[in-house]
Length: 229
Ligand code: APR
Image 1 (cartoon, helix red, strand yellow):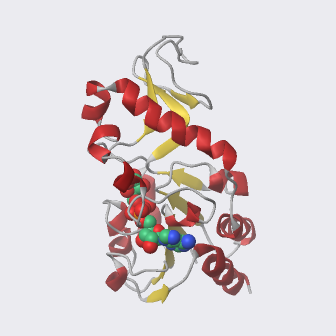
Image 2 (tube, rainbow, N blue to C red; image 1 turned 90 degrees about the vertical axis):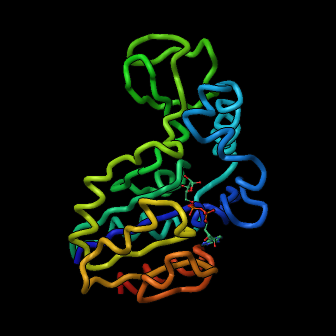
C-alpha cells in the first residue's frame, strides 16, 4: 500500500510560520510579484534577498510541531509499501522532525543556488553580494534555491510516478490554489483513498473522498495512529 503525503504552509502554522493566504498571511503583507518572481529578482535583487534572508533567519526561532513529528514516525514505521512526503514548504521543519523520504518541490530556504555553475548548496546565513558559491567559488551570483512563480517546480517526474502508484494520498495544510500541487489529487489511481486535513475547505476539497476538518497538530497524529494501528 504505497502512500504519498503532500504538505503546505498550514502544517507549519502551529510552529509559528505564517501561511501565505490566511488572514494576515505573507501575501497580504508583501506583494508576491515584488519578491517571488524571476522578474522581481532581476529588478531588485537586494529586496528579494532580504525577503528570503528574513524567512531563513526565522527558521532558527521555530521548531517542528506534533504534525511534523507524526509524519516522521509514519515514515519510519511504514512497512506496508512505499512512502513519499512531498512538501510545497521551503522551511526545514520536516527534516528537523526526522523525515527523510522528502521532496521539496518548491526548493528550500536553507539552500543557495549559484547562477554561475547551477549548483545548489546548503546555506544558513544571509546571501550577500559578496557571498561566494561553495561549489565553484564564484562570488555575487547566488540566489535563494526557491522556486518562484513562473518557474518549474522540482522533482515533478518522481512525484508523478509516486502519485500514479499510490493507494493513499493525504494532503495537509494547503489551500489547493497553486498548481501543479493542487492537481496532485487528480493524478492518483481511481481506487486510491484520498484524505484532506485542513481546518477550512481547500479549493480542491471536492476532489477528496475524506476530510479531517481540524488543525494539523491534532488531525495528523490521529490519522497516523489509525494508519499504524
Ligand atoms: N493546520 C492545517 N492547515 C492549516 C492550519 C493548521 N493549523 N492553519 C491554516 N491551515 C490551512 C489554511 O486553511 C490554508 O488552506 O493551510 C492552508 C495554507 O494555504 P496557503 O497559505 O495558500 O499555503 P500553501 O497552500 O502551502 O501555498 C502553496 O503558494 O505562495 C506559494 O510557493 C508558495 O508553497 C506555497 C504555495
